[in-house]
Amino acid sequence: MVHAPERPPAGAPPARINLYSDTQTRPTPAMKAAMMAAAVGDEQHGDDPTVHALCDRMAALMGKEAAIFLPSGTMCNVVAILTHCGKGDEVVAHETAHILFSEGGAHAAFTGVQIMPLKGGGGMFTADDVRAAIRPKTRYNPPQRLLEVEQTANIGGGKVWPLQQLNEVAAVAHAEGWSTHMDGARLMNACVAAAVAPRDMVAGYDSVWLDFTKGLGAPLGAVLCGSADFIGQAWRWKQRLGGSMRQAGICAAACLYALEHNIERLAEDHANAKALARGLAQIPGVVVEDPETNLVFFDVRGAGVDVPTLQRRLALRGVSVSGLGGRVRACTHLDVTAPMIEEVVGLIRQSILA
Ligand SMILES: *Cc1c(COP(=O)(O)O)cnc(C)c1O
Image (tube, rainbow, N blue to C red; front, top):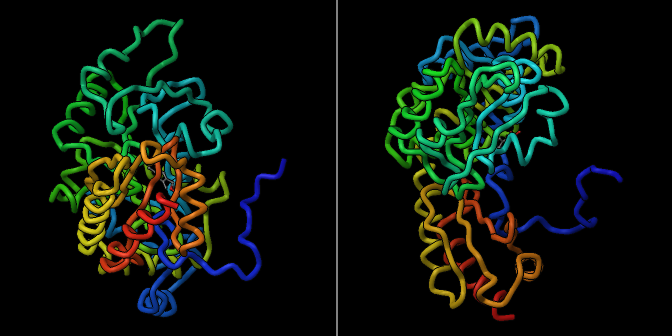
């Protein structure tokens, strides 16, 4: 079995309206210009000034001592868990967490942790749920080392953890002597939607990372933040995993550009998601989850179509959406405009009817 991604058929045009994922944004000419102008050096050697600028800026934004630039969000989770935990340790996370669903079994393959999946609506759980997950500290039990949350919760529907709930679950973890880690792939969507400053949103978390390749529109890169000691240890894992780079300032420049230009505009993506949800709710048989950020999940089974059929019909109309566990997911992002949303509601209506 070959696991390489399928290529599109030769000559197939890209979707005209791409709601498949906010990862599919293309760098804009202005972002590319910032990349071309970047001062660079050997990142692995500590000589890339643009990577340093990005890490300093991220550490300040998150209210942490230090930061490390990594190629992807997945590598941030892997490096963070390797740094917090040893083999056989247990990580407590939501049952829909990215670390369970979408990292190719990395935590069994590399980190050697086991993950205790907690239930709860919207990809979230409560302080009581964490208390109920605490194991007695005996030699029989796996040592529990880390609590992990996702802000926003992806499979949870792009829901935003309320700040108080984030702090409550972190307080239970810390009282047990565990560390806390936030998968902040879409953290800025949460901060914009809730009007909470990033440093406040992540105050209860020992480590946190932000993805620059989701709604922020950069081609590559994520930044993991934490204490100076934690980031120092994380560098060892980055080196071991082959995540140390060379003239990475080219990519860090795109991330800096995104911090400058692409955060406040996330509010437009959220408004577009709400407009899409309102339009979809008018289609008979379609059940839409109320979006809090840029992810719109809807169920079309009540309208008599299944997800692959709808995807196929939409593809013929130049629209791409993803399917996640019986639900359709439509992501809004910087390449999706309000007029496209208006148009796509009509196209989805047509695709459901025929
Ligand atoms: C996308 C995503 C990741 C992984 O990020 P990559 O940059 O794609 O490796 C991790 N967690 C969540 C919640 C995500 O949505």
